[in-house]
Image (tube, rainbow, N blue to C red; front, side, top):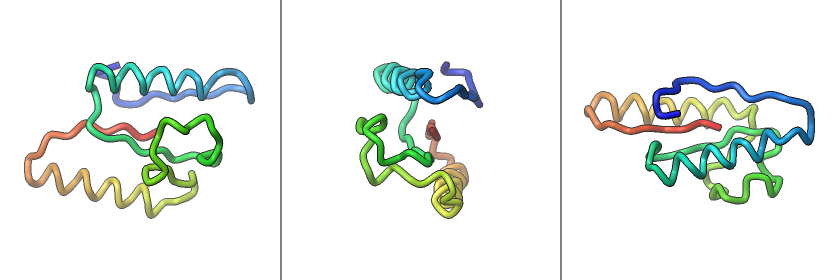
Length: 88
């Protein structure tokens, strides 16, 4: 997981995708793999993601939120601040 750059999880409804993501986030947080995390999902308001603070949840079509996140990462890179982020 720590060396993974991109992971794609897909499946039919009720197949356990959200539970898998929750498990990955939990274990990654426990081992401090990531400094920050944002969620982009059409189902962001469901209880599947209640372990993520609302201020880090965005609708999947919110391109501005993603662009803001990318700009923050770019700014950190300019200042040579090492951060490890996760986009769900």
